[in-house]
Length: 171
Image (cartoon, rainbow, N blue to C red; front, side, top):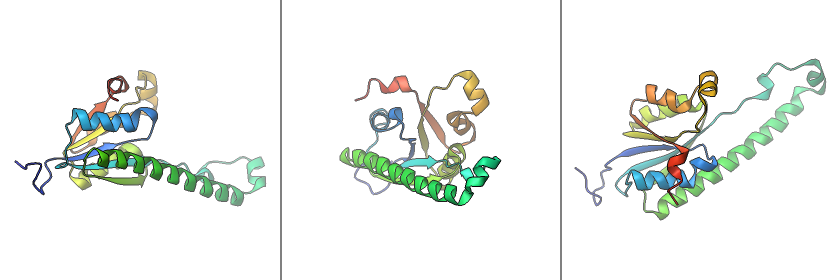
């Protein structure tokens, strides 16, 4: 077994954050505390953003009269702002991890979150995937699907789901 002084990592942990209020710093602190993460662990802070291209949507005649060229320009600028916000948020989480002595890196990808999480877990050969649950009700989960439910059944590694109420005791 590797020691904390060893160059070998003891665990490869994928921490998935959507940067929501209950899935950011408190969530990371929960992971560090409850999973007893250490410098010996390899931690990847992972964010997937899903972007709906408005030019792919069916447009009515009034919108078409305005032209999609303007829409593409506006959307491109908005997407750039969203990406910048995500990078800033993930850099803040990285700083928190590093301040606590955790060996972490940030990965940001675009796509369908549940699919990308499972693909990335397989690619990295993670030991565990950690994600927060938004606590959707049964009906919403039935119609929209749940990222956590999908990952539990499709990720090649173990998945830990952290419920919002579990974060209340963490500072």
